[in-house]
Length: 77
Image (cartoon, rainbow, N blue to C red; front, side):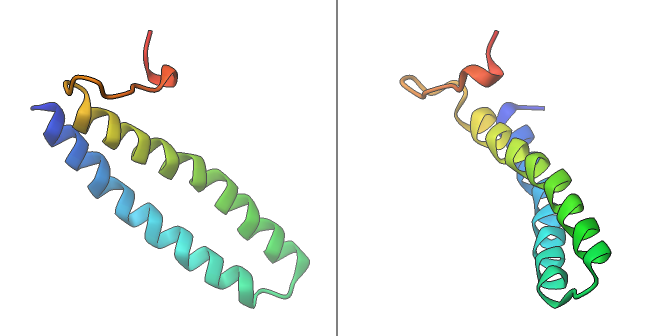
């Protein structure tokens, strides 16, 4: 498997997360019960870093071998 294929895998894996976050935000706009609002916000807070990381890793693996590409220190040793 190449890094480009891995990058595409990350992008594909991010799609359901993005859709779920969109749905949760719609539910949050409609929610009136404070407990339900809390649960939705908590779920959004849990999923958002996952989506961010998938996007960052997709970008990193897609451009890993390009000269001059800035690699985030977050993913380097």
